[in-house]
Image (spheres, rainbow, N blue to C red):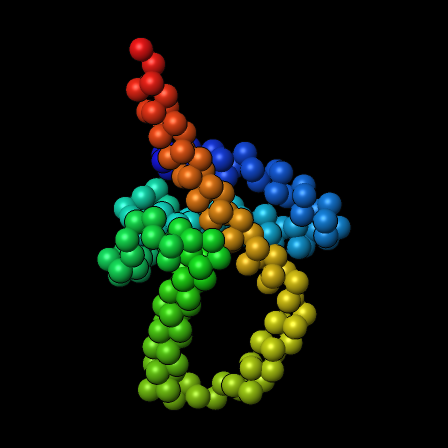
Length: 174
């Protein structure tokens, strides 16, 4: 299994390839930037190793406490943390729960302080318009998050396979 520094090098070395292929396929700079940015974020901060005390975990700084319950509920390298698509969905859902909780606290505080003059219907309508306008960038972000996680999982698998092969190869030598 590669170290955190090796995972970082793989992410950074893969970024130009991912960016170039995305630009070739989409011919759209904003989609390319969305995918490349989320790939970088996933590779450096939002990847599968958030289930342990890792470089990715440490990069969350003062916010790393939000990943403690996630770590306690995940076995390292389980299909829920390292599985293709599932791992990214679980991390997004987990982070989404925190965002919803913080949003609910904010709304509760706003209600207590009688800040209810906000035009909630207008805000909802604006958010729907933004979601429709930027749906392709949203899809690119999801793909970038998954590709960043996959680069991590694949390098773990390749590293483990290589170590097993070397170990068995050494035993077969006289």
